[in-house]
Length: 251
Image (tube, rainbow, N blue to C red; front, side):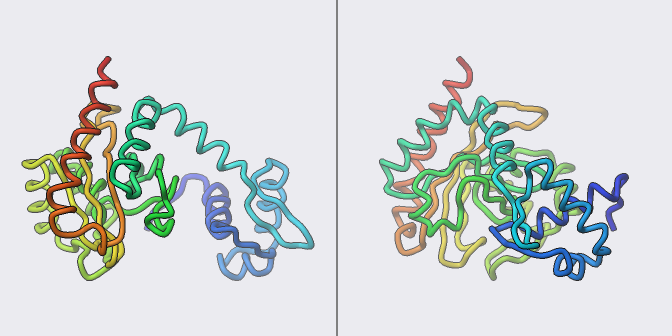
């Protein structure tokens, strides 16, 4: 079990997570759900409200947009985001599918920007986080890490099953990562959602010890991303766009 040096901070984070997705909840409801005293939950919520993180009305609390402002500020400060934006937009226009710039954070593939999210039913949008082992972009990021780093990911985060196609064996993951590293391209064939597919290419540049600045991905429903379109047509477009981002980053 993970230990937290500051338990109160952990409680605050749990309350924030419990209110995710636009949920509204009262003190009693949250206290019961989180197994924390009502007095403690109330004090945390009042503090969060005074900090502008949550809003309240009639004894019900919900998250405000303060965290969005903070997150967008962090995202806007990434040079790979600033450089990749036009390519992500152009790739969406040329493919007619959702496209994304993906970066790694705490074992997740984080979608720093997504163009035309409606084309993947908004299941992946700006800020969406999915496990690295269950998505094309995430597997690509793992493929450029050392074996020790990959083993540490598996030990820390596990290989949670999202669909019947999600990789759940460490040996199978290592085999897949070797194949991805050899071809410089990764695919997701229903590993997050059974009816979704994606293809991703690396954006090579070392950032804070990572071999990649991120990954560029095209994603959409299996009915459109399959066969020759997924295996041959889209990879060339994604690779070319990722290479242009690399060159721009190097300037």
